[in-house]
Length: 164
Image (cartoon, rainbow, N blue to C red; front, side):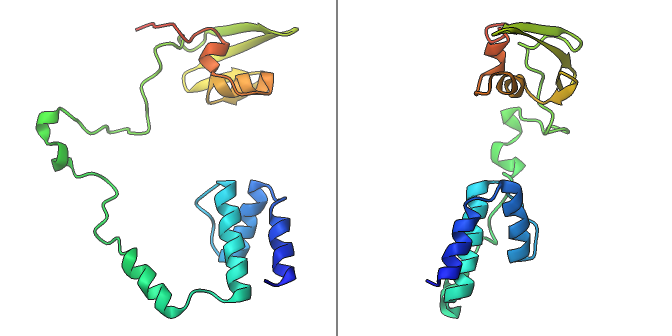
């Protein structure tokens, strides 16, 4: 393989995810739907190699399309699969999940001492606030505070709690 292509691929290894998304747009001419760093790296590296060494033959492309024919692929299960007897009702707001019963009501202040600091978090209806910044989860706040991954409910002493 050409040394310049190898150098380009090695340079990609140092790119951040945001930089890889920009490079993806340059290479493919479209925005990436993925923000997965490894995926972006592999796709861009493959395309750089394909440009330098030559892509798949036309015969290989046709065969791949035959294999990948997904015209009958359904993205959602038909409502008739489960039937009405299953008691399943479609959710008009599928993105809304029920509120975790271990969480206190919005407006509650959660406090915890960590090392020499006192951590104070405000529970919001749609997340949490810590030091004037909004977070989607307690785990994100625990990670911000400690620098390591934590279960947010455990970190704030709410893991075994049930309100409902």
